[in-house]
Image (cartoon, rainbow, N blue to C red; front, side, top):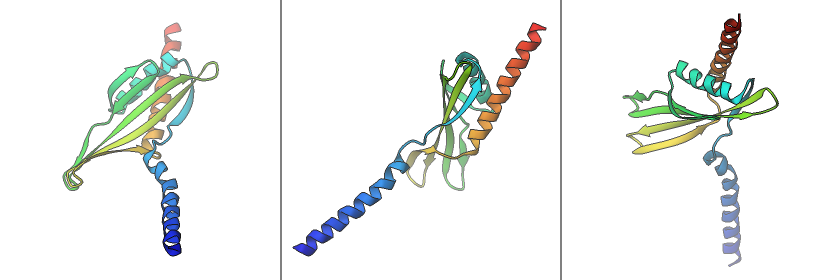
Length: 150
């Protein structure tokens, strides 16, 4: 009986040890954040333009939130299709500053796996690409307003 109890305790300990790493895999990755100059309204307009320049389709859009999806990339070889869904949240930060939070999800549909899955992305080159395009759009907006005043 003592060996059974010891074995049971060991099994529970191993199970609990494995559970510590599981939440990271199943929880959403935290968004990456960029702080820019401007107002929520200005950045909201620029965020939409940035997605359009990157050939993303806007799927939802309200002041302070923008969601967009990439085109669907299909692979005949692997029998799957992939799409990136980007969600932006725009909030007022310090006076004259706005925080832009970008979260990415990869959606994969696979015939070989028999279904679809979503995975929150922690690292992806699109984070830097989107933030660079967003900053470019914001700079163009400022330059356009300065040209209008002259």
